[in-house]
Image (cartoon, rainbow, N blue to C red; front, side, top):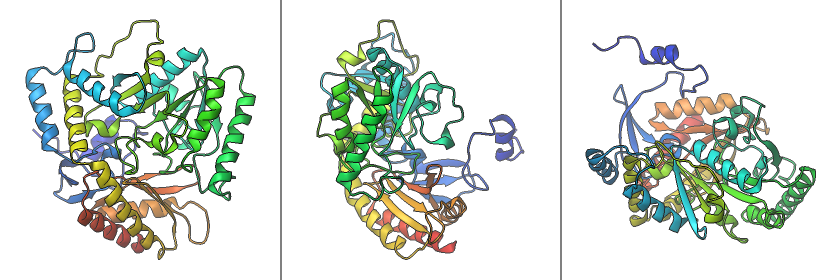
Length: 430
């Protein structure tokens, strides 16, 4: 028999209080197609958040569901103790696309685990537990990744296995450097990095940075900043880890990876990825040059990382992305959407800024006439947009309220216009 207790009540009874849910009256999503999803009451929504940037190509993409079904009909699980053709095929493709020479790939089940692995590699390779991270950053919910998260809303403990130093520069339009032009901003951030290194004890292992901060509200530095950092890091032998969990696979439109906007001094030493590559299947991973990846002197495996089913999904999803030039679509449709949002924002007093790249847009809300965050307005717009048939995300740092927009990369011009109209109505309704 079906349990008659409302699903939300059952959720609250058996799951942690800190497990966040969107909306005053949370919704159960039952199925999706293309850029749309439906809830248990039959309401249809245009999905502008894609399961936190995870449904990268489309909901129920036939090529992916077919690959999953066919692989599941053969074998679902074996672990990395056995040769795994889909895993090797996806690793070959990712290594070639990464831009890292002599690349090796290790698959995990999430972005958190990917960043954990990157930290393990960097600290082992450098024989140091010191890590540089960016202010306002987010890298996962595990013990080690929480310890390098510079966003207090997502860092529940100050205990840490690492010694972390936080560096300026990831937020262009707030903070003590915001008044500077791009060149002066970058120079000041580099100076801050040098100062922080002067305070570190011995050799720092790595800098980890999101090219565009996700949870932090889609904030980013001027192009070239991490390349300028790389020049300093290389001088000290410090590794650069680019956290591409949200920026990878062409979402920014201009580049396939976020780090490519900062490439003047070469690629990162380590790149982490997750989310979009699986289109909803649980895939994360790490790419590193062989010298770094092979520095571990103990045995290791992954029970679920590199699962034949998830790897088959990844191969099919990546092939679809490349064959249909979804990076180009993100650039074209995303550019149009950003222009439309900026036109709307110019007439809404509470919108401080529209920022982003490709199909990765942030809308920051403040109390009109101030720089003070307005979380109540953000919550109200989120609710109003849902009532209008549009799903959005939220984010921001301790002093910002941001709506996050990141639809599947196959978004059409008509759908972008539809979403912008619903969002405009939601903004005006408050």
